[in-house]
Length: 73
Image 1 (spheres, helix red, strand yellow):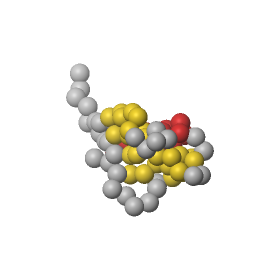
Image 2 (tube, rainbow, N blue to C red):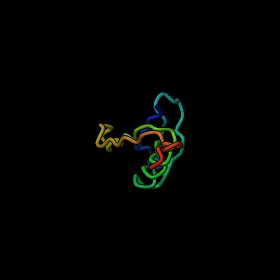
Image 3 (cartoon, rainbow, N blue to C red):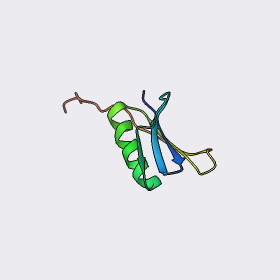
Image 4 (tube, rainbow, N blue to C red):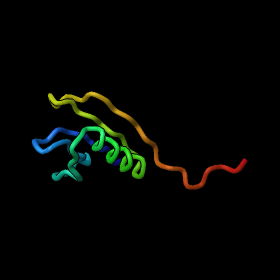
């Protein structure tokens, strides 16, 4: 599972994959960072974890892996 953290940086809001040493991307707003993190989490079947300005976790959303072979019926 690839959890994506949304964290504040001096230049804006960053998306960082859990366990990564570098940010995936940096955005002007927290909402823009969330949308990017959400797409990654949906594609990889992970969570988005939004941190507030104080660094504490503010919100968490879970996205499962997409089902490429749904049942017929």
